[in-house]
Image 1 (tube, one colour):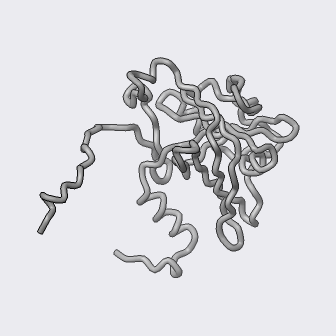
Image 2 (cartoon, helix red, strand yellow):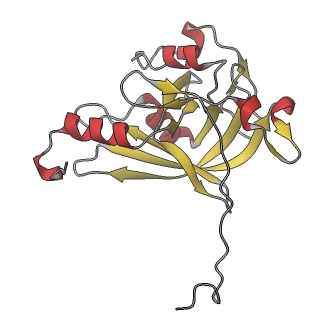
Length: 208
């Protein structure tokens, strides 16, 4: 099967992308508007962007007509956000925050989510998460013409990890039990894990 992208409708492109690029980690983002209203929303167009400086990226699709979603607007205005990681223990409430709440309604308040203070930013963390990345906005890259997505790149300035998840200098993946997004309404857990050591190039062995 081959696809000519110019011949595809938007929904066809969407289904192709989210069906092929799986599993996707989920950023449960808290942001805050100028009045202090806390927004909480999940985004699965999320990943590591840089190690030094430590950065993550979150792509937030715009609403029909090009209007920024609350998360992108808040981050653009305040320059701060927190990525709260998603696991088997909080995925149900994470899903509830994906509803299309009005801009003047806080998902955190409406759902009774526990808010915890951050160490380096004003935006609070979510108590339902066990790993948090406090971020300051590095840049927003507007994608598309007309603009259809805001690629948010944030510098991580502080990290919180529950003690039980950090063993011998690394995250215990089994204890973390992260949840990822697939296509449609589907999510996935880690499942079977296996190792493949990275090979070392040997010029003698590879000589022809």
